[in-house]
Structure formats: C-alpha cells, structure tokens
Length: 244
Image (tube, rainbow, N blue to C red; front, side, top):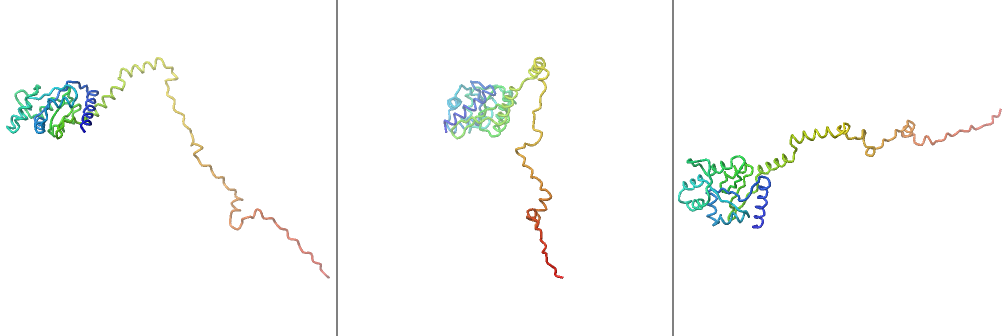
C-alpha cells in the first residue's frame, strides 16, 4: 500500500507539471485543521511531506490561519504552535483577518497562478478547491499524507488546453489558404465526390423467380396434372356387317 501511495503521488505530480507548469520547490499552504490532525497521529510534517512529495517543498501558512487557531482557545494550542513554525505568506486581509478557508481560497483566486498546494482537513474547503483548476489538495488519512487525484475540472481544463495548442491559429489558417491558391492547380483545388455504386450490390440481391407461364399455371391446377403428357387415343369404330 505504501509503494502504491507513492506511485499515485508521482503520477499526480507529473500531471500538474506537464499541464500547469508546477515546479519545485512546491509551495504548500497549510491550515490549522491539517496541523491538528498531524499532531493526533504524531506526523512530523517537515520530514514527511518532502519525503512523500519526493522533491523540495516550502511549508507556508497565512496570518488569518494562525489567528483562527488562536481564537479557538487553548485546546488547539499544540496545533497552533506547529502552524507558527511555517513561513507566513502575505494575504490580502491586512489587519482584518478572516477564516482560514476563506483566506486560502483568496490566495488561489480562480486559476491558482502562483501554483499553491493546499493542505487541509476541512471538507467545505476541499469541496471548493475541486472546482478550481490546478488546485492540488493534500490531506491526512489515518496516519498517512495523501495527495488527492486531480479533480474533473482540472482534467477537463488540461484537455482543452492541449486541444487549443494542437489546433492551427488564425494566422496559420490564412497562410495555408494562400499557399494552396498559389501552388495548387485549379483543377486540384476542387473536391471530388467519392464515387458510390448507383444501385444495390448485385451479390446481396436475391435472384428474381421466373414467372410461370399460363400453361404451366393451368397444368398445375388440381385434376390437370399430366394433361400435357396425355396422348389422345383414337377410338376405332367397330365395323358390323348388316344383314339385310
């Protein structure tokens, strides 16, 4: 299972590399729910995340995420202390902190142009992240860190990008049209229709049965069988001598 988990992580990372230009060191934004889960399962995030990803990473958080943990009280002091060890990334909520989920979503905006990973256990935040293309999601399942499979939105956006790259641009289409007009003869520009058989395939059509002649029909009637082969018998008259 461990080997399979690492293989999945490599495959998902290559998807983000090839389609969305993610490059190491990977920037991972972490909230308090993730550090709290890591504390429960005694996971050292600074050691385990780079080992799982397989490349250099930067563990980040925001002031809003730290402020949220501080407001939740002393029960989450351990999770908050872990969160404060990470580098703080500037968010747009200067002096007016918001919830951690709202803050992290604002960091990604609509396209995640800064190529952030999000590490969270918040189900509502995870649901919103799946609607954003190129938003890698990390979570903890029991005692293991997991990189979620790219969402359908990410996959469809990547497919449309590939299609648009392969399709010729308007300038290329115009150039091709001019080259055809210049080098191709006039008779070769016309598109000939493919010749198709006008009638049905003679091999697939059943042969028509020959119509019976009237005489054959009459002969086939009951009581007239063998009438054709009958020979007319001549009856000989008996000559009798008349005695006067």
